[in-house]
Image (tube, rainbow, N blue to C red):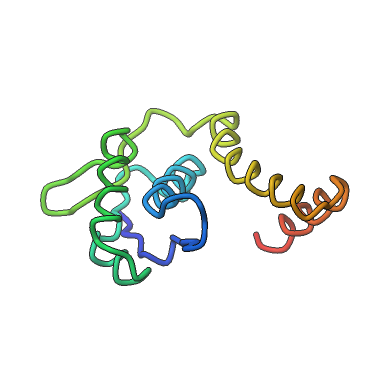
Amino acid sequence: MQTHTAHLFSIAPGSSEPIYRQLVEQVRRLAAAGQLQPGDGMPSVREIAQALALNPMTVSKAYGLLEMDGVLARRRGMGMVVAERSAPAPAGERAALLRPTLERAALEARQLELDPDTVLTLFATILKENP
């Protein structure tokens, strides 16, 4: 069993999306992509709160929602772990997780009056920069 550290997560404090929701969506994406494997240990609420300078109740709320949705499970003596799933999430489900982020990016591109070709070229460049 691998234990992950809080460095997996990044928070955008100025975002209109609540912080707990940012955490929830990041865990969902990491689990759907297989970067978090079933049985992998998650950082404690305190670890994440300290690493990201968050209120522990915010992290606890995110973990609670993820547990209710079956993404995480509580294991006695181990804390939270990634829940077992029968198969990796299909590509369509993983793409659906990306849609809200892309919708926000599209809104910002329209606000900046950027043409779609410029935005798509920039996105393609970013995709190729960091594996």
